[in-house]
Each structure stands twice: as structure tokens, then as C-alpha cells.
Image (cartoon, rainbow, N blue to C red; front, top):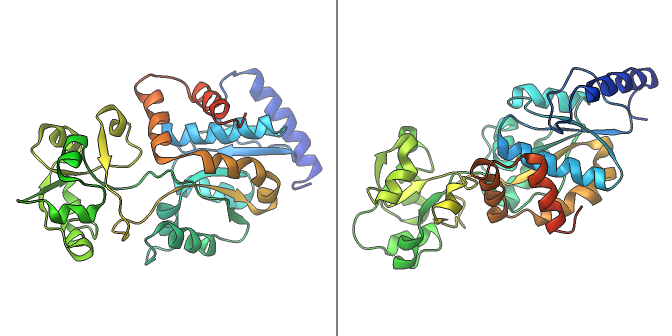
Length: 297
């Protein structure tokens, strides 16, 4: 038993009462602790993270675990203490961003290096399960037509494009290590810069910029046929979807959650986000269909 018997009994009553008031699988949490045999799955307050958390929750339920969902908890300052204290057991995270939270001066950049550094940086009591190939990170993205015209697959290929190229993104990108200076130093690519802010994708589609700084899980990658360029040299800090678990439950749930991570791809995550933001489907329905499609329900 991971928590005290008395606490478990009180929590059971509280959870039962809360369940009576809502049929939403991502209903707002209370302050109560879950029973000892319940896996508490949390999520941040945005749709992509909630969908992944719901996939974890339904996969665990399908394997016979009792699950308590704690959605929309907020930012890392809010939910990491709850993970460390044992109020939460499992949370979908992102390798690079979480590593920088614990180690702001990290020099790790590639997926494997970031994953290894994150495992070492986590505080006692927390464990990383297997990371997914799915990402939600900065990228250099072009239109499908531009990629086909110039044979672009990686950022390095931009060096072979004749004529000046313009990179668009938020104003701060110009001075970031993965802005024009980083592209030149890492890949030998010369890029002019245009501060496009919230209109970056629109300007890419209009042709006023050639390359856009877009997050890799943005649903417009699918709906607008965009192509994120591969980054083999690690210009960007890799940030893959990764489950963070309490160490005292990690091995118990690994056989359920690791196959989920193995099946979740970059393109698949974008498609899930399209279903939510464009098709307006609920996280519950999206998760159920995804698990069934991948034989994980």
C-alpha cells in the first residue's frame, strides 16, 4: 500500500462523492487524495496534453487499473510538486522543456541525449517511462510545395536553395540560439528574419516568408499541408512526449504505458489535435478511437 489506510478510506468517500457530480472523464479535480490502488493521471490545461493524458487513463482502465483523472492543473510550478508529493502518479510531459525546467543550463540537444539527461535530472521519486517519437517543439517548417520544388527534407537542405530565404517567427526568435544565427552556425544556412508573430503560418502560406517557426504538434501542419524539416544536428532542443511517473508505480504501469508511447507518432499527435481543434471531438472519444485503432484498448 502506497498511502495510509485511513487516508485511502477518506479519499474513497471523496472520490465517490465527486464522481456522482460529473460524468466527464476530465472533470475538474478536488483536493482529495486517491485510494491506494488508484492511478492518478494529471494533465496540463491545453487540449493536446489532455488528449494524451486521457489515452493513458483509458489504457490503464483497459488493463484493469482504477484511474482518477486530474485535468487542467496548470503549469509545472503547480503540478510537479503534486507529482513529487505523491498526489499524482502519472503525467504526460515533454523531454526538452522538462529538462530545461530542472537543468536550465543543459547542453543536451538530440532526442537520446535529452532523454538520458532528463532521467538523471529528475528528483528522487520520479521516473521517466519510454519517450515517444511524437514531439511538440519548435521547428523550421515550409509548405509542401516549397519542399517539393527544392527537394527539402532537413534544415541543412536549405543551404542548397538559390536566392535569399526569409525565416518568420515571434520577434524574440531573432536572438534565440535556434534563430538565424543558429541556422548559420549549425547548418551553414543564411536566413533573413521577419518578425511575424501570430501570423507566421498565414505569411508562410501567402509566400511572404519561406520558412516558419512552427510547433510540431500544430494542427495546421496537417490541415495546411506543411512540412517540418528534420533537425539531425539538434539546432532545437528535442522535446518528445514522455510519461513521468511516480517511481513506486512506474514498473507496475510500464507494460501498459510504454506501448502507448511506442504507437504515438509525430504525425499521429498532429492528427489527434486536428480532431479536437478542427472537428471539435472530445478527448474521451479521441482517446477511445485511437486506442482501438492501435490495438491497445
